[in-house]
Length: 328
Image 1 (cartoon, rainbow, N blue to C red):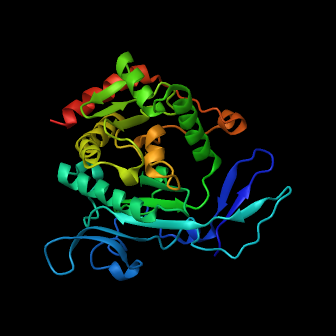
Image 2: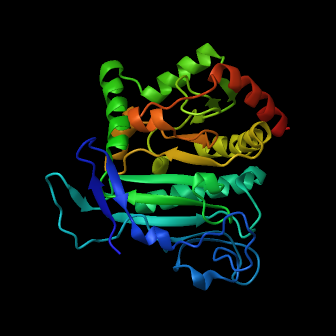
Image 3: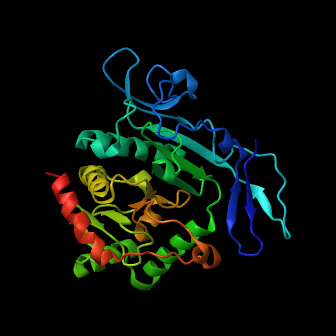
C-alpha cells in the first residue's frame, strides 16, 4: 500500500496516511515466544542491512533491517493534488535496529559497551541512509504501549524522509537564523545558558543533561554532547562515548522517579541533504527523552498549547538525585 502525505488545508499541518502500519503485530505487554526479533526467527524479518556478530554460529548482538510495515514508501506511483485536498507521495526508507537478542533486555540495563554499540549502529545506519535524496533521517525509540511500541523486544527505528515536514524545517530555520545573527549554534547557547542557570541541570560530565525551560511534559530531558557538532551521521567517537555513559543511568533514573514510564527517545539528528561542513556550523545533534506522563485534552487539541502540570526547576533536582544513584 502506498503511503501518502495529506495536508490539512485549514492548518497547513502534514499527516501521513500509512495503512500498512495497521498490519503490525501488536504484542502489548504480553511475553511472546514467537517474537520476530528474537534469535531463530530471522526469517520473519527482511534481510539484514547491519549485523554485529556474537560468538556462535549465526549469533548476533545487534541487527538492522528494513521495517516490514514502513511508515513511508521507497517509491510511490501517486499523483499529487492541490486545492482543498492537497496530497503528495510520502517516500523514503524505514529501518528497525534490534538492540539486543534478549527479548527482556532494555537500554536502561545496558553496560557502557552495549550502549556504545547501539549508538554506533545508529550512526552507521544514519550514514547509510543519508544522501542527496532524503532530506532528513529521523531516529527514535518507543518504549511502552503508551509510547507507541507494538513489540516489547528492545529496538530503535530510523526513518529517512525525502521531504522534511514543517516541524523539522521550522527547527532548522531557527537554528540557522540564530547562527546568522550570532555566529554560534543555538543548541550550544541553550546548553551554556542552562549550565549557567543550573536549576534545571540533571548531570554534566561530557554530556549536559537538563530539563528544558519550556518543557512540554514532566521530566522531558535533553542530552547535549560536548563534542556534538553537526549531524548524528557525522558524530564523533568521543560524543557517542559520552552519551553511552550517561544514557542508561538517565533511563534508570526516570524509571525510578516515574515508576517505569513509557517514553519516546528522539535523536535530533539534523538535515541529511546539506553538506556536512555547512550543517556543522549551525547544528548540533542532541537527544531528547519524552516520558508519556500526560495526555492531550481539549485545550491542547483546540490550540496546540501543551499544558505541563509541573515545573522543570522542581522536577530536575529529583531526577538528578536518581540519576546520580543509578550511575554508582
